[in-house]
Image (cartoon, rainbow over all chains, first blue to last red; front, side, top):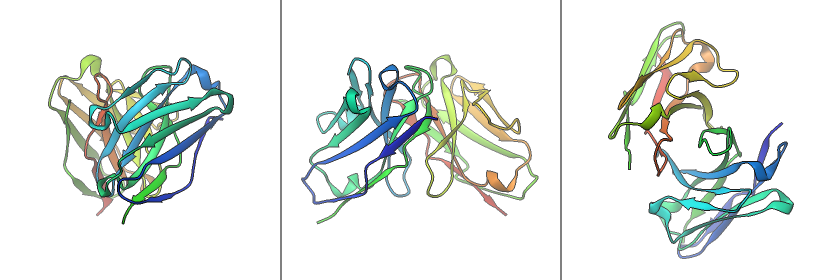
Length: 120
Length: 108
């Protein structure tokens, strides 16, 4: 069965960077897209960007352009999301999610979430 | 970006009752690329509906979606105890992908 397992919670200081991993199993990693979605406390879900695990192409929300980088390691079936210049407003639960069918941007499979806390 | 506004913010109903949730888009959602998700505390969202009206795999038929253009509705015909949760809509027809603010369906 499809599983996405994310790295553990992080506490960072303002201005620092954080890198969250998402290890996939149960399917052919290269054949799908991985998205990153975050949810700040009491806020709506917010899409950050995606990576085509096959060719490495990426697309980011303009809101995070310049601060977010999504990469993947096909040999490890793992996607990564790095967010830089952290501020308190970046405190949120970060999810990776896989599309249902390649490129459909429907989030059928989700990781368990990684809590990132930004605090001085 | 296409801003999604959900109403009401909270719906207080009893098991067995019908729930009607609304999602309004600031721009027309192309090809009815509108999805609904259910989220329970401490869990990731679960895909319920896609293409405005198609149920995802394993979703009970008490869940139905309708609408087009800018106005969409999720209906739960008879609420079961496990249906009390937060429901969010998502448009995937244009970038950036966006979500609504959610409707909490709570037990009255």
